[in-house]
View 1 (cartoon, one colour):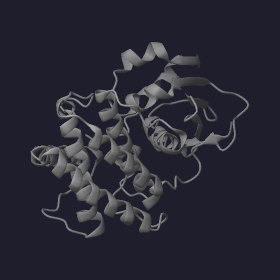
View 2: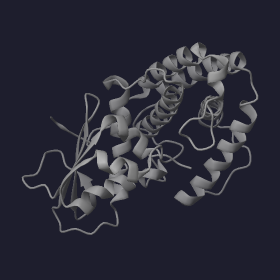
View 3: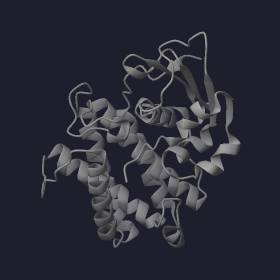
View 4: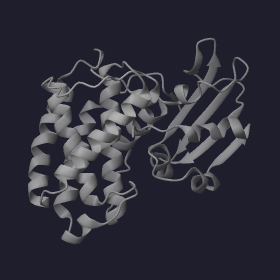
Length: 279
C-alpha cells in the first residue's frame, strides 16, 4: 500500500456529491428525526442541518462575494476558535427556526452554488483563509477546499449516525476526508521531541483508509514519501472510529481500547491529540 500525505488533495468535486447525498438524506427524514440528538454536543439533527446551511451561505458571501461585515482581528488559532464559535452559534440560532422544507430548499440552492464556486477556483492559488487546525494561517485553495469537504462530510455523518441511516463511508468520499485530517499531524507533533529520523506509521484500516508516515527531520515532522526501514511507532485506527476521534465525536479513552499500537506507545498515542475541526 502506498503512503499518503505528500500529494495535494484535489477533492473540490467531491463536495457536490456529498451535498447531493445530504439533500437525499434530509428529504427522507421524518418529523421526529429532526429533533434527535447528535454526537455534536448540544446539537440536534435540526441544528446540524442549520449549521450546514449557514456555513454554505457564509462560504458564498465571504469567499465568492467578498462580503465581510464587521471584520475581526484574527492573529492566532485561538482567535479563529472564538470567531468560529460565535458565528456557528449565531447561524444555528437563526436557521434552526426554519421548517424542514424551507431549510432543504435553501440548502439545495446554497450547496449547488457553493459547489460551482469551489470547482471554479485555482487549487494552487492562495486561499482567503488558512487551515488553522493544521497550523496554517495561510493555505492554498486545495487545502481549504479539502477542509470544507471534511466539514460537510462529518456533519452529514453525524446526522446519519443519529437517525440510523446508512453512512457515506465509501472510498471516493471518505478517503479524501481522512487524508485531509492527517495533514494536521505534523502540527500536532510539533512539540514532540524525538531523535532525527524517528518514524511513526499511522494507519486507518478499512477500504477507505490508508497509511501516513511521519518522520522527524531538521524541518520538523514531515510526511515521508516512502516507508523507512525502521518504524519507532505504529498505530492502527479502524475507519469507523477515525472521523469521530478527529472531530471530537468520541472520547479518546473510549477509542483507545479499539486501537492497535506497536512500538513506542506514547509516541503513537499522540496521534489522538489531533483535532481537525475548529470550535
